[in-house]
Image 1 (tube, helix red, strand yellow):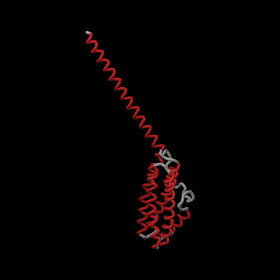
Image 2 (spheres, helix red, strand yellow; image 1 turned 180 degrees about the horizontal axis):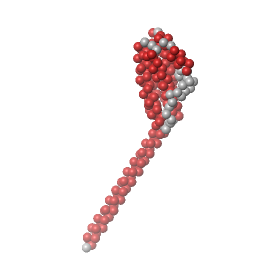
Image 3 (cartoon, one colour; image 1 turned 45 degrees about the horizontal axis):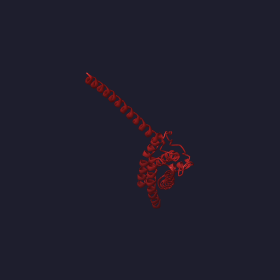
Length: 199
């Protein structure tokens, strides 16, 4: 009788311990998952500084103007080299505008505006309204020359902004974008300078 009671007590104790063990595991797992989620979320929302935000907010309308200038090309010139270059610039910068929007949204910042700073005074290399009107009124070789000179200045401004991001920004994706902008646009500046020499 004594042995049977002992067996029953041992079995009951084992059941209680097993249940407690399961409960502890569940609680631990839940806590760990919650902690990990919180940490990841915090990292995603704090891994940037004012330099990153400023760079992205300025680069968006800067890119928008370059795309606008590129769209003018096919209707203003027959220069196939210039038409191809403009298409290349548009194809590179339009997706970067979406990337900029996604990054700013991830930072909890408002979506950027294509017209912000469009007066040409807030960002290096931006064309004024008068310059854009002059470009739109030109055709042929005159258009080619104006467009190349303006886009070289525009690209130089973008390179300067991207360099400032590399100097002061901390967000890895923003810095990676800045590095790409410098590489792409310095190559295009060299191409455009060569094309100006041909005109």
